[in-house]
Amino acid sequence: MGRTEKPTSMDAAEPSPRWEHFPHDADMGIRGIGHSKAEAFEQAALALTAVTLDPDKIHPHLKRSFSCEAPDDELLLVDWLNALVCEMDTHKMAFSRFHVSFNNHQMESSAWGEPVDRRRHEPAAEVKGATYTELSVHQLPNGFWVAQCVVDV
Amino acid sequence: MDLSLLTAVSEHEWHILPTGQMRVPGIVYASEDLVREMDHKVYEQITNVATLPGIIQASYVMPDAHWGYGFPIGGVAAFDADRGGVVSAGGVGFDISCGVRALYTGLQRKEIEPVKQVLADILYRNVPAGVGSTGRLHLDNKGMNAMLSGGAQWAVKHGYGRPEDLNRIEEHGCMQGALPDSVSDKAKKRQQDEMGTLGSGNHYLEIQEVVETFHDPLPRKLGIQNGDILVSIHCGSRGLGHQIGTEFLKKMVVAASHYGISLPDRELACAPIASPLGQEYLGAMRAAINCALANRQIVTNLVRQAFADILPHADLSLMYDVSHNTCKVEEHRIGNQSRRLFVHRKGATRAFGPGHPDIPPDLQAIGQPVLIGGTMGTASYLLVGTVESMKMAYGSACHGAGRSMSRHQATRLWKGGAVIEELAKEGILIRSPSRRGVAEEAPGAYKDVTAVVDAAEAAQLAQKVVKMRPLICIKG
Image 1 (tube, chains in turn brown, green):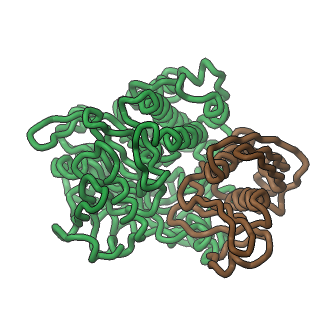
Image 2: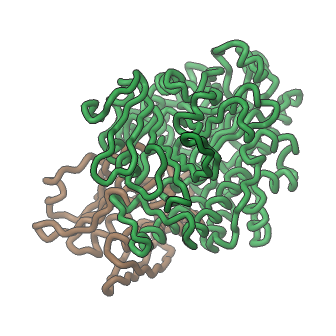
């Protein structure tokens, strides 16, 4: 379940996987929170989708696969989000279901979605790219993982 | 921003003295109120930019500065290749060569009013806007490379405009030094169906009425008077520019340590100008500038077609086209020397003063037009560069109002449908595929563009010519 209120440190400690948006002057902060790093990445991707449209309106019937490699988790997150942005823009797609698995600094992932239907989805601002601003992948004291960054819209 | 961190040099000029790793001071051009409104992150970003190798004179910000990524939006910084200077993908941003162009129409408001609804509908139908929209032109690889080399000159050659349009576009419509081979296949594929599209977010196509003139005879010299109708187009290099920004940010982040560059923020990713990576980025970024110039040229052609259908006597000649996310090589006087600098403007407009050789001959006496986009409910401005501005921040000025709140804060305060209804009561027609997009771009989500423009004029960065009010806004 996503939401767009400004998160607090207490919110981030609540034990439920979710995504949220956090404020940035001109752009948008996206954050995924999960039981595992993979789940946090999946939730961050949902937050990415929600910048543009409501993920609940997307029928996840087409699958796309992505392989990413980067020297650390944070660069991997940006790489993956940008792979999704590129696919969304090039093929006018929207995704609402994700699966991520890691092997050291490599990542295999799948995304399920459908072509954007401008009437049904009512997309707002497109994401131009994921940035390194407020970029963080870390584990909370309660064991939950957080994956976040600002995206340019 | 905490005023105690700055030293006021004048009412509209504030200095941040170099500390720590800063190589030069920071300089903020803004009124006290605008400085107070700026987020502390702007301060951090000004001082971070000041640490980059080869930076010359100062890290500047314009009156509309706000928190960006790496560089602040509204940031200007120049680097000298001979002194180890860098080029930064973060200093240009994702929407490379995003910019504004303005067209005369030869019409007055009274001629627009009877056909306003129809004109709005035709423009909305003709000009693809919003997420998922595609243009009518599909570029194959050969066509893509030709477009990336030729910019607006390529577009005019292919029938999207008039040869005389090129006289009123920066770089005469074609950025030299573009290297299409430095642009990835992914970036080209992302762009192949996006030529002639507005995009989304803060991009727009507006029909505007001139409602106020300043500094007579400047408006007359530019052929403008009260009640004139202008067209304004704000868009950029679309998916191609975004992909180039994405790819080179990562390349530069990874390569920074190889070049011995310590980055206070990864988003400041950069490479020495003289390095292979720096040269590769410059070639790709210049290709993206050409993409943006060609894109605005094609959109212009679509607008002309729409007008031809219902107002055939209108003559849509180009007043000027200016970009606000670029890195350009320019000659500037530093002390007693003329130096060749790589000037980054991120959310800042070039604003060359009268007499500058890069201004079209017929505008030499006036100065370069500076187009400042406002919001769909307030106003936009036309200014011109000043002789003074050449000595301040390499001939630069602000680029827009700048957001005063985040997008999701805006959607909590406004509903798109209600914004459209309210503006209709004021005589402003909005056409957009996205009600949420309209809410995010609600006029109240932006700073007061008049305060920003007044500060730019008071700081002598540019001089006001006319104020325009929107009558029709096509929003992505």
